[in-house]
Amino acid sequence: MNRVKATLTSLRLVNSFLSTRLPATRPLASQFKKGKMASDVTALKHFYSRMLVENAMENVVKKVVDIVSESEWTDEVEHELEELKIVLSDNFVIRVLKELRNYPSKALKFFYWVGRCSGYGHNAVTYNAMARVLGRDDSIELFWSVVEEIKSAGYEMDIDTYIKISRQFQKYKMTEDAVKLYEFMMDGPFKPSVQDCSMLLRTISAGDNPNLDLVFRVAKKYESMGHTLSKAVYDGIHRSLTSAGRFDEAENIMKVMRNAGYQPDNITYSQVVFGLCKMRRLEEACKVLDEMEEQGCLPDIKTWTILIQGHCAANEVEKALMCLAKMIEKNCDVDADLLDVLINGFLSQRRVDGAYELLVEMVNKDRLRPWQATYKNMIEKLLGAGKLEEALNLLRLMKKQNHPPFPEPFVQYIAKFGTVEDAADFFKALSVKEYPSSSAYLHVFKSFFKEGRHSEAKDLLFKCPHHIRKHSEIGKLFGSTGNDNAAS
Image (cartoon, rainbow, N blue to C red; front, side, top):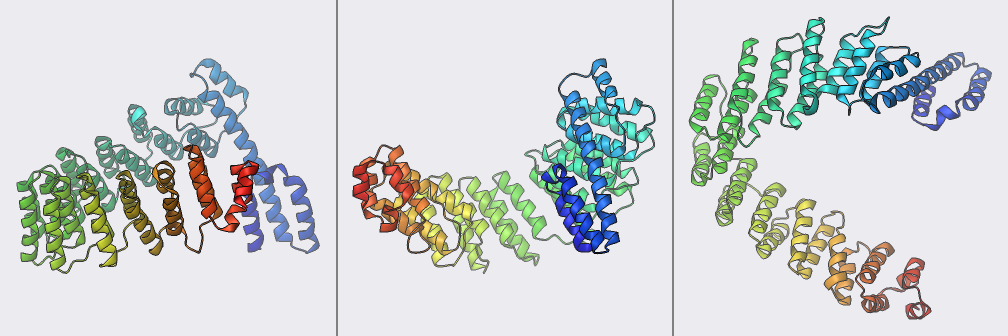
């Protein structure tokens, strides 16, 4: 029985099933009957009936969406909808609203029209669906009007709707609306969690100039519900203060944290380091790490990375390297994130050679595995500086560390500026086995032709292995009888 249900569920995902449902289900039902599988016959019939209903509903949903979305709301639109003789249900309304999500004001018109229809009334489910559609910047006033309607009608916004809308507000930097929504929910029965509070505080603090009034509104509302501030909430407040450069107040928050039983940790101190670096107070940022050690909190790799990144952002790469040396002395190992920060620091000063040497040293001596993005960035910068040999060396290291190949910039560079020998070296560096794939050769040949370098393409063909010279696609590319003879 379970296998039958699984099969039916899979069939549901196949669009062609609906168009072939009748001939497909009848033989299957007959087989079930012959096998005296009565319960399976019943399950199949129910599945078939459900598919008919859902398919019919989808057709009506599409018609409604087309009518509503293609013109402004008028009496004529309402007349067209009435002509459809729609059988209204919560499921139907939700589906239409979802399809109209890119037309929020029209979705609301439809929502109100449905509410006026005889025999149907909105409820918490449909109100929440409407709120989800309106929770965006271009319909924010409509959103808040519907939120008030939800409250007036005696319904509540559910927690799933809150999370979805709050995250959307935060994603698009609508922090004031996100805080207002948080306050609204905290006054209701479905209260956001402490994790939701922490995430909201983190979003506020992430701005260039955090709005501290919003921070304190969130904290005040959290406390007003009888909660004591958690370490995460304290960190959220502290993060906003340090990001805004209000270090005296941040220090006071740390004292309050200690009195509440929460000792500052790497997260807390890292926020101070970040804020000081943001204000270009780099020496003070370095002293914070000394203070950490005095307090028995050893800086971890993330704290060191923030400090070094702050120096790189301030164009102080040499001092960043001094921080790196001090970090290594403290037996803290470099990771791929920190290496990426340092590489970008070098590249921001157009020190391509220094970035390359650092990367190679970290790979060969420290056995570090850089991010693929770090390799790709470094390769592009090397090729931009005309350093093909160094770029090929990084391609070999990528292959050695099992990163996917990155041929595109090499092909473009060699086709424009490279020699036949360069192309041959590229194939050697690219191949995992004895030779690269035929598509790799074809890509290079096409690029040579695109640059008008036909003679180089021919010379390269002579140097290729026999199976490449005889490849049909490559033969077609070279085209002429003379080239075919050359290829042989």
